[in-house]
Length: 341
Ligand code: ATP
Ligand code: LTN
Image 1 (tube, protein in one colour):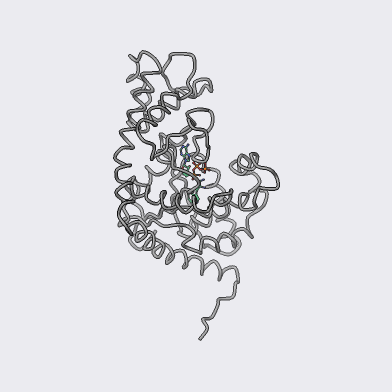
Image 2 (cartoon, rainbow, N blue to C red):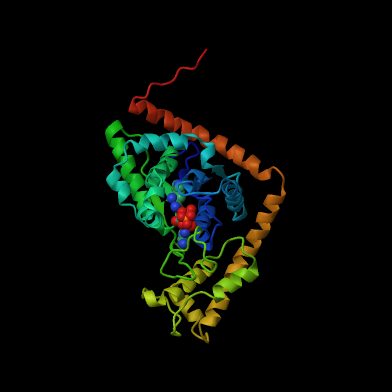
């Protein structure tokens, strides 16, 4: 609990590409919803993005783009703290301290590590990719966050964070709040449009894989109209991998328009085929993204606006992070530095 009596949330997104509707429905939308009730911290996790190779200029540009999208989706910098992870050096420092406590066995079991490293040559897998969850644990634990709004794919990393926090508390005494994952009821796992058995991801390069938040309407429509479905006609939610494409389109529709699964299925009972479903999904996505893109353009056009928010955010975040870090350093027995007079 914070001074203002509110519980705290923290979450982040990597600037490793262009944000997708998966990032919006799984994460960002929940952030907007919780900002009134929680003391909220939202960061752009650039230190996570460099766990795989990034082009420096693109990374800088994407970092600002992601931060501007936080504002464009409706996160209010008066109510929430928005900052860039690497602007608060306590994240790197706590990550190292926790690295010394993180069992290799736990890290080796992480499915995100297994998936990402499987695609790389053994020699090019950086140790940072293995340590990724420890840095994420540092992000969360520095703020003593009670809740972490994320998509379904982050459950395992949250479990890791809880286990590591418990291990620290056990070894050195109660220090960290044990956080809970906050996963949305619909849209927690949006699948790739071209390969609906795989999670939609911003760092996939195939052209028809994802709808990006900044895609123009014509491209959104084209991508959704080309989404992979099956040879049947039945428009219903289903766990059958054969029906994964239709299931995904219905899920996106439901996440945007609300209603129960039955209500959504009833809405399509009279549809003539998958074309009608795709058109309805495309119009829902365009309707969702158009106003967001307008706000994004306004934010980017205003000289200095975004950078002021980020400077202010980093200062607010650092004040809290540094207090936790000082306590951790002390508990671990690191000699406190005395200022040079
Ligand atoms: P990358 O492809 O670069 O690994 P990503 O697109 O998976 O990235 P992250 O930055 O790792 O995105 O995730 C940011 C947030 O968005 C997390 O809370 C994550 O759970 C959520 N998220 C990412 N992809 C999806 C998806 N397809 N459906 C729902 N939520 C998602
Ligand atoms: N690992 C997360 C991104 C992330 C994060 C965080 C999410 C980094 N630090 C702290 C919540 C809280 C991912 O989505 N891949």
